[in-house]
Length: 154
Image (cartoon, rainbow, N blue to C red; front, side):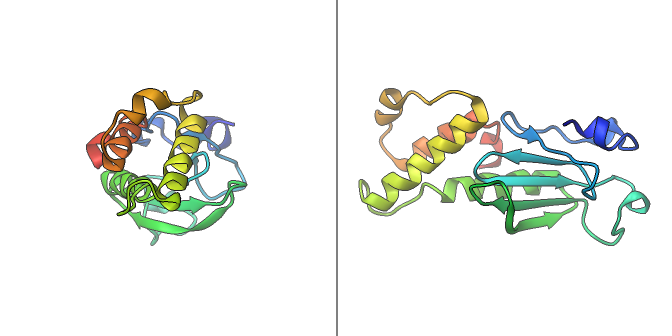
């Protein structure tokens, strides 16, 4: 699926830069194009011209959590500024791997979840040996966001 095929009236010049690893999952029966970060988030990108939108009064962008099957599981943020959407994506992903107690089961599970998202997005498993040299979860999160093209948003 490609947004250009599913939404031929969507002006490609108005599409913001989509971060690496986000998959075009646009479908013509939806209101607008969408891009998914497997296992984590989906970004909905509506037409730049409100008159072309199904709901002209709604914001142009929406970022939603997804469940394991990819179904929308709640809105993280909606607005008209793409940078704020990317910032929210970075904060959301960083929050998946933050724990105050280093080495606790929850923190390790969260890091493994972040690794799974990275694997789905970049198509390869991160180098765990290299990552284990990082001193903190925050450093691991920063590296993960860098790989996803969201480092400037963190």
